[in-house]
Image (cartoon, rainbow, N blue to C red):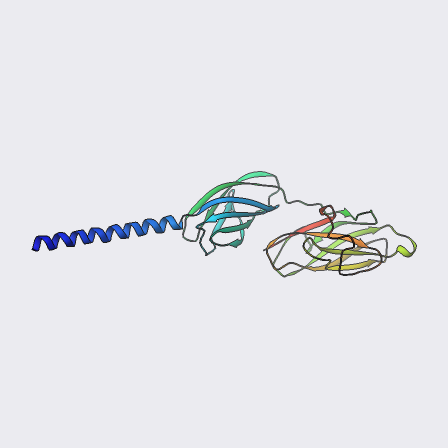
Length: 231
């Protein structure tokens, strides 16, 4: 009887140990991130799709340097990685528990021109500076920022002065001014969207009037003056 009880006790211990091992193995498997796809949303922003990233933000390394994480969930991670050349980079995603997933991604230069003309050449804007820097800048969600530039216009008679509008690629014009002189400089204030992302600053002219709509719809990217990275 004593031998049987001891044998049952040993089997019980083995059974408990086996369950503990299986549970630990399952936990490790569950916490291992798996990447099923990636997408470059726009120059400098990359989305990673998969599972097991966890709900607590981890880290992303592009090449040998850290990237700025703009969104993190168990199934999707977005990060910004601005480069000065088109190239393929190794990327490492590390979860908050230390699990790692590696992949490669092709990024393109995020450089955009700082001069543009409107649809018929009546207005030209150049030498664009955002917040006193270049024509590309990081802006916090919902924050205001300044856009400084030089401009020139071509008009005569009742067509003057030309109204020059600025806005982002996701909205109606945010700001406008009347070009009282044909060649001048201007500083305008704009506001970043609340959602993270890369947005282009567009401009167009409106014949005589400043109003809250684009005359011919959202301008094409050929009328972009710069970009803001919101995160």
